[in-house]
Length: 384
Image (cartoon, rainbow, N blue to C red; front, side):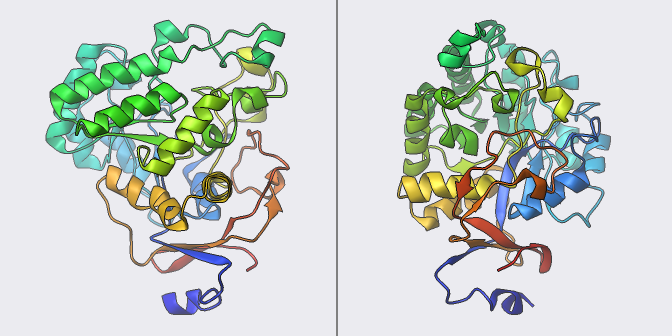
């Protein structure tokens, strides 16, 4: 069956086969809670269309993912076109006050712990969580933004922030969070993963921690690799995410970190919202953009075409990097085929996601997934 599926692409240099399929360790499916934005079914369908065979859902749902029952709900539908390997909360109800029952959550299927969307601000709580997670052999994934330093910040300092008098986020809001958590990692030995990196200083902190031999990793999102705050055209919340886009120096540092292996994986931070949640500009709109269906195209353009990264290393950032983080290996019966010469524009009307909140509309990229196979079954196929 697998050979039959691959036959149309074999021997043609325009097609790239990704063994195991793409993996994403950072997605929001809003299920349960906000089904008008995304559900597990629509999210998994969008993931398959983007070339993904496995995704890790975040627990910032309603209710929050702090119980075995929540995890069982995430895992209950084995017929989805993309496998879900869920994370669970670090703290009860994601409030940062009391460590959740990590042992029960791990037993129920959690592959990692995170309060994504919120920073665990209490260092004592974080240390307890990391000690317990270390004993379980599970990574802690941190949304690294110190609330006291962030304040009301909605973007980094740039022309649009000054034009509309928008509150800005200093880079120290991220770097000081990372600095603290690396110190806790040093004490506990727990694997620490920094989510959606946006600052050059964070890349350097992770690089130094790795040189020290600490189990610290970080992820690069397509939007933080492609865009800077100087690209924001207006007070348009389709450009609003948390953390916000960095400056051009940050973009260059994140690209360099991906290329040299400091940042060993990509992740989308796919964050769908209904149109009404993005209608009020930067001050009042929700954070986040969708990214599953554009992730391969953007990261190929940025890292392979522009930065001359090898296709082999690009594949690793979407496969073995994320799989290693959550303690898995690629599935030999799953794969993705990328057409590296598709050369088409981003068209939101073609998306499988329920939401359209992103700044990429009309941008043109060369490489797009054309076939996704999960455990021997075709989950997405476009014209080859």
